[in-house]
Image 1 (cartoon, helix red, strand yellow):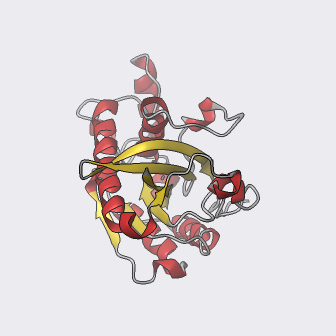
Image 2: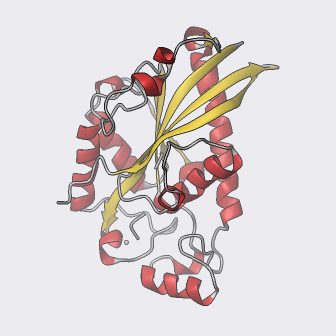
Length: 277
């Protein structure tokens, strides 16, 4: 049966200007991050100087990694992170950055703009943990999970429609391990780990709390396999700014639609764009 395997790299935005540190890539730092304030959706601030440096570092780290598609949250800090990464990468020349509201940060309701410590105390008082806690008028974990599901489904259909004809391959279960992207990848820690020989690679730039929900959904609900010895506490932790997580997805075509048949994790929360010493 014919299948298509593609890579999905999530990265968290870098830091914003004056708000909470928020991948796929997690965006860089804003000033709100720096000041320890929670942003969520209502505060759409640009990257801070440090955040721009983080985005530049992430771009340099990923400059030789080939991408076929680039998606970003429609929030400013994520778009700035994505655009910075793309300008360093030759494979992104001519690619369109697709901004999608399904990737925007979790809404923290009345807590947005307040110190993160205040929200942690609110969560503790309610017997919950942060960032899973939902303040009044905020978005629940279930609501964010639904956005993750919708984005993944839309992405499967788009990737399949764009690349199935030219890059789909017959599934040969008896093939040797040399055809396995993980077995042929470069040494651990390299930017292209797990994606050598993978013809389709989507970069997704999103936010910290969103990434927590997305990774948990992939692992717990879709049965994503993890690298041997992986600590689940680390897997489900908040990704650092410009933290990178990578997954390999295999899809099959049935009745005119593309469906996920397998998913595995290459690594999570790698700080390839960290410029702090």
